[in-house]
Length: 508
Ligand code: ZN
Image (tube, rainbow, N blue to C red; front, side, top):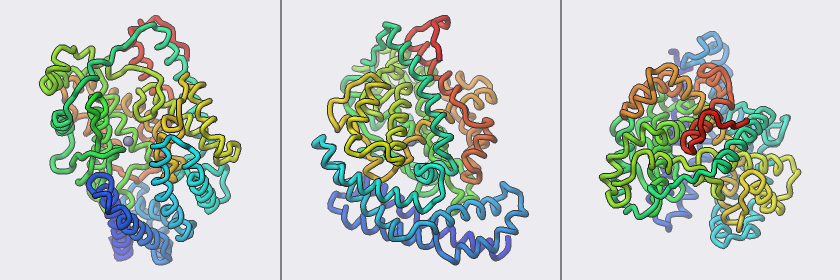
């Protein structure tokens, strides 16, 4: 490696350090910080964001990349150097299109909007949040305009989370997913079968939940000394480095599922981060190809592993020991069914695996309408309610349990929601590939032998970090995006949990 690549790596390492330091401050803000620190923390985060943006958008980095490009193009496509130049070029080009003042204004406005959202949600009054949403949307329109020409004003927003994804390509995929889910939900309703989730409901002292969840996560194939688990209001995982991943969860004394599968979800994100090749540290390649890919790993560990019959059988003795009053008499089969109950409901983050995707389709469609100006913001609560009735058959009683439930729009994150559904689709495809490659994966999961699955995922996905675009990675892994594996997975679960024999017809 010659001098110029060394200089590139140094510049990118500093940019990476600024981003990771910012992530650490953000983690601290949401887990440890006393409330009094909020104002100072906003300044500190903004300073780091500005420094990072300035370096990424700098002329020095741009001309260094220009000089290196011809040489990088002669190297193998997936070599570290060629990938580094390609991905850094993309990051630099995007940063250089956005004026620093606009970037700062988006951050500041979103921070104010988030506080207003907390208040509006508390009093369940959309009108308190509406002017802030208006500002956020206006700034995001201006942000999108930095990337003109585009096919759809939503494209640049989507691109921040799913590089190179286009609205025109995502829309039919989510529509196909929605159409496939409707008959599954109908079949559950028409089965006349009630799944009892009482084994997971009751009184689960939080200290004991904390102990149990810690043990379950420690039993996953995460390298030792690379993670910690703390409490927060809206759970997330964030990597300060590939060997320092912060997991968060929240505990609900009355429902065991929140913390247990929530923590497995975040651990799935950690398994991804800890699997990235160490040679990619402190570079822009030290990340997943997209949020959809990252989410595919959290969903895979939460749902395909965590909610499987085998894993729950494996877990049952520990659950019974931790909560003898609640669970000593529950069979693994009862817990498995409780963990997979399908029930249309109001709140996305509490939704089951089947109806969850409809919550996403709803948000995606509303975002599209906002950005192609076919929906006025004042009509948003009503549009929300109509969609909920149509897709899930539930009535929205108030704004807090409707349009105000998620933080994303307050935080200015438009284009983020579809990555959750894409993650589910990708997870199903990856699970099918891993099942075909590994000898009796289900039985392995039932024995709690998760190392081989982790190794397979690492070899085929994690280690590459962000060298490939999402489309390239999908092509390599599973030959392109497909809705069917996810629908088949959900159909199997529904048939199993709701005792629909193989002959019961579910027309998709
Ligand atoms: Zn996630």
